Image (cartoon, rainbow, N blue to C red; front, top):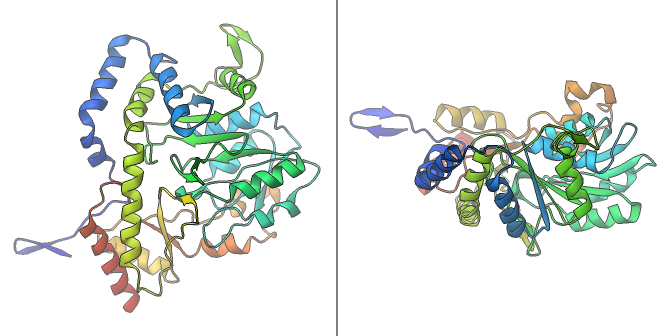
Length: 378
């Protein structure tokens, strides 16, 4: 609690502060949006083309194909690779639902591999035993902004002639050995949902690839499978990034590295504050890995108690994700509840994501950690 005059006022700390971030670049954003409005060109216009060029240069890929959202980015990728009914795609159960949902929407079967405790990402050692004659692809997720062991995964995929689609929804700007994630596999998919490190002011997404043939096919698939107006080579989607969102993303892309660095420094400060708190396991950062901390996620045994008490103290937290995908009702038809994923199921009971964003204040971080320390001592 903090005091305001003679009355106590509850401190309020959001999980992410989008409004304050907007104020820092308000003039640039509004100028870009107004220019689009005045142009009369709102779909697949110059800002979309320029953003695709600029993001390709930023991430180090030959091609970026923008689309309506991160879920469509996954689905379009699967469609472009010819994933169909009867095919199997290996992925993780500890992720946002869209990762597996896209596989199901492509009429394929998601097959769940367990994760590693230290980084919450797919365990490469658990992949090969899941590969069958029906396996066509692997979708690893770079969760919370931490690159997964993508080099090992690509090695396994090449050995078994499988595609790799990197789910980079939470990791725009993350790197491994100095190379941007999303550029190791056949395709990388990105979400620009407003809360992401690079977020639009609505839904938006993109696919990156070094394969020109794939890029061209995805461009058609995002626009009803059309090669030119009223000529349709494929059954596709209506999934296009609009000009306003592209203009906003072009402004924000210039600041992404700066914002990611601020997140990293905030994470380092959390680590320092938690240094002697033995009941809290802080996030790990792997060697040669650039973790961009989309989330700062701790583990602790008294998770639910801490979550509730932090809420009472004005601190917003989120559990990403409380129920593994393989235990969700929507996937009952897979009959995979009996196939235990022990690490995934354990982690889901221990994880808690704390507030983190580029301009989080150190005194807010100190307050959060002090509240947690107090709760754990009770």
